[in-house]
Amino acid sequence: MTSKVQVFALGGTIAMAPRREGGVAPGLNGDDLVGAVAAWTGGIDVAAETLFSLPSASLTFAQVAQVAARARAAADAGASGIVVTQGTDTIEETAFLLDLLLDLDAPVVVTGAMRAPSQAGPDGPANLLAAIQTAASDEARGAGVLVVFNDEIHTARFVAKRHTHKPSAFVSPLAGPIGWIAEGRVHVPLRPARPAPTFAWPAAGLPEVVLLAGPPDDGGRLVRALLADPPAGVVLQAMGAGHTPRHLAPLLGDLADRIPVVLASRAGAGQTLRQTYGFDGSEIDLTRRGLIPAGMLDAPKARILLALLLADGADRARIVAAFDD
Image (cartoon, rainbow, N blue to C red; front, side, top):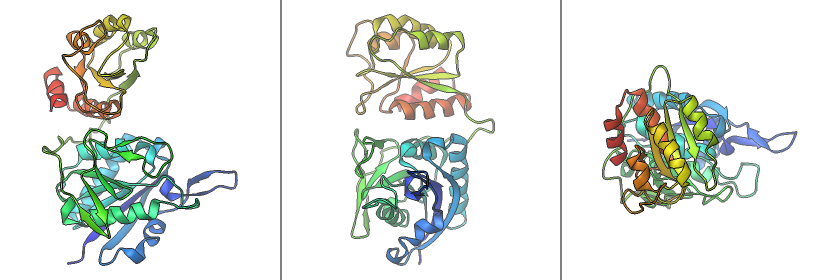
């Protein structure tokens, strides 16, 4: 039976063309992208639709929720898998949000390009072809939302962009890729032990969750501003295993008395510790003051999970349990 893959194009470098004024900007549509790899898709029936034509930094979470709804409808209509193409700046956020909004057996694969089609050695066609092959594969079914890049298959919860311009920019520092594509064949020998929780997109959109850095020698101006006008929640991108300057700890504790404050790390790999360091401003001190450890999630992904939990009416106990899991 012929596999059917639906491609949703959102813009990004993979779809960019030169501008007369200089540089590149989104200019190609989904049909253009699929047409460039049509000779290699074999027996896969590929359809394309352009939903947006934006650099990914301008994509909103509400627009990603629209993509989730279209992906669900495509799967219900018989698509074997779904591919989403977009800019690489926010692929990790898009993939993780889709993973939390979708509970599909059909593979949903996000991909893009580090080099525009007009540059030497563009990687977009190879990434798109690998993504289509993954979306059509039985190997990838039930694995959650995936990111395919550079012939590697990553899970949404672990993938991260770790270089500004190399084609090998996407990695999964904590767990590694779960599979790969070679000679057109998809291999997925690993998969998460537990699926991601699934949320409904709130009609009112997501509440405001602020991502706050906690660098050394921070005077606390931003924390005091948040105390004066608190958002719905805060994710602190702390140093190391979850540490801040000692003088910020009481302010952060005051903030955590009023709203959920999640403690994440800027390190780029590893989980937030809980009971190793005991100095003022350490993870032990901050959790005693009410901050919630992010566990294995980095700060941008913790922000998405916290926002969805708050929109769903979660209390503190449920928020803590979600990050523990």
